[in-house]
Length: 167
Image (cartoon, rainbow, N blue to C red; front, side, top):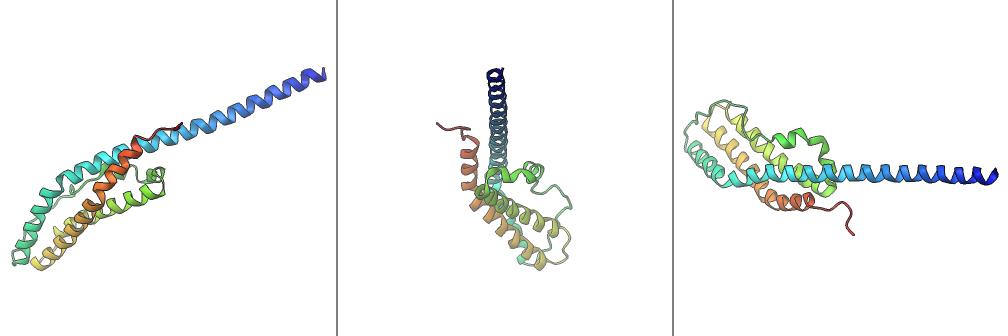
């Protein structure tokens, strides 16, 4: 009887340990899957921003030159400037990328937000000097986002292709 009890206890303990290990592995895999999916989505969103950067920069530099020459720009009001829906929808999940990537993502998206803020403010200013200043600020933010965004796309793509358990 004592032997049967020992076997039952050992079997129960083994079952609990197996369930606990399976739970830990399952949770680790879920976090890996979520982080690689987020990395892929952010890389895609940044690819669009980087691809449109050269032409957008030319337009904004030209507008800045016009404003600097004393011409008041008529910028129509809109809130649809530099939208970043994937980042906005996942801002609380950026930590899944790890501290280094999360920091780089936060920096690039802060620069994009800085550009967006400058453009939104530009719609409400009254003088060409103010417009020129905001455009300079916005173009600077756009330049920083581009400079850091290009290498970040590759880092995010590498993260997206990472394997759960490398043997």
